[in-house]
Length: 271
Image 1 (cartoon, rainbow, N blue to C red):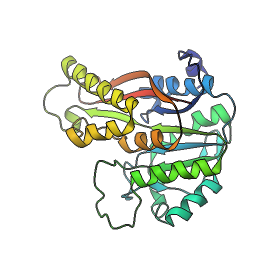
Image 2 (cartoon, one colour):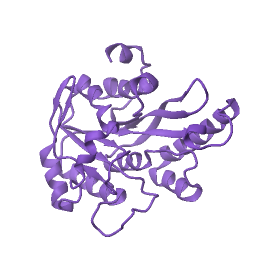
Image 3 (cartoon, rainbow, N blue to C red):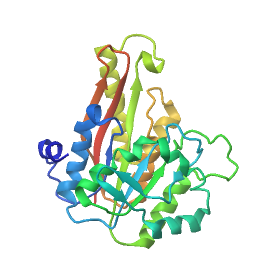
Image 4 (spheres, rainbow, N blue to C red):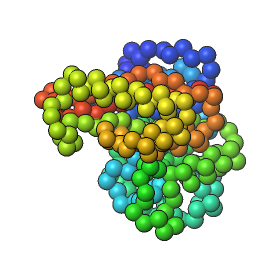
């Protein structure tokens, strides 16, 4: 990580960075964008924050709404403890609805892949972790037993303001998933790759203009290229006050045989 951050370009923002969007691809494929995102935090937020909020995607679990955990995390770099006061305020707001599916974290990579980068920068900083569903897709049973992404975004914003101190937020987000492996017809050729990049950049511009514009795009046009992290990007951009969002890097990772491609980006939230 030290070498990756040293090699990443300094974005030279004139204001502190309070959050990032970075991939949850494996490091071999997504490493350049992890480094691009965390370089923004290394140079733009040197002082240790009071907490880091890490927002992931629930790829394989059973939870139909936002899923949180009241437990900490173990990584090769040590233990990260939860921010208990923030979790208690969220429990006061929603009861146990946020925590009933926390076993989903056991097999989920989207949060875990960010934790070593956080530890590298700030050691054992308290963490608030959540898996966030796509708010443009209706819950299977909208019976009040789970918490929606939009409900959670508003509550998290309020709770973080009440908690005080300085919060940094990380959105763990992969973008398009395309190619025959994902059910697309035809080859993943250069023309298709250009088309995907054009669409990705269009949606990222809408996200930079405002997270509601990104949601409107997917509600209007669907999610044909299978972005998997719309919810956590929306919550990250809603919950922590900031003045603007800037794109730092974009990358496409394709299999050599052309069977599949996953895209990702690095973005910074400026104070």
